[in-house]
Image (cartoon, rainbow, N blue to C red; front, side, top):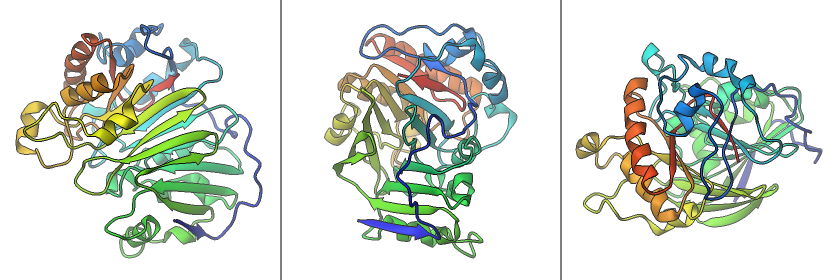
Length: 353
């Protein structure tokens, strides 16, 4: 089922060439395809994010990470995954979270010369949108679920302020309500001054939950993921690479080694798995029904699915950067025993597969 809103329609099938006039604003890290050993980046600051998740110290701010982007080699072509928002639940802004960032879920997948993809529309969508130049633009978004931290960036996405932008949004509805109607309910007065159809660009909603769809140049597998509300996980096969996205995943209570079959199907053999790791084991005791999981469980999912590189994601808004360093170091050691590269998502991190 598809629903269209917006004042304009995209009347041309022409895709913007290259990056569509956008300015590169993030560092690049190259990791190998397949299950071989990881290629180490050239700088200590990026190694702290990719190989072990920790190190002597990551840059002190997102801006500092960006300033090092010219020091690294970025593979030409391929699939580039960039992190624009990595927190869960609510955005946070304080000095103790500056290294990893405080925006909520938003991860882009791009191939040169093709339509950009994005996982989730959290507050990280706003800074990503600021990198777009003149259109036309056609963008494909894959929303995991309708909680605020995954959708609040939509009205601040600058490309939608132009009539020559089309955004196709794939995701689940809720309790029989189509996704487009749910968006219209939370993006309207008195909660927000305008409604989706008042944006200049065109938004087309596609309800998906348990299916495989062809989108642009990619095959996208959609499966339900255990969480507190109807939630999707995604497997994107594009440019000869595979990225799995499981942003919010309820760790099984009383059976810590069980992994949902649909989740395994999404993650099987993925080059890169982006996975929920919001809680520590101690926190999970009191939050067992909050719909999230530990880094230990994320590593177990990656191990069971034969994943090469696991990126810990959906960081707790109360987890400061130094504590995230420790959490990721422990997960990286566990992953190393199984031949899995484990790193922690950070705003500005860019991985080219």
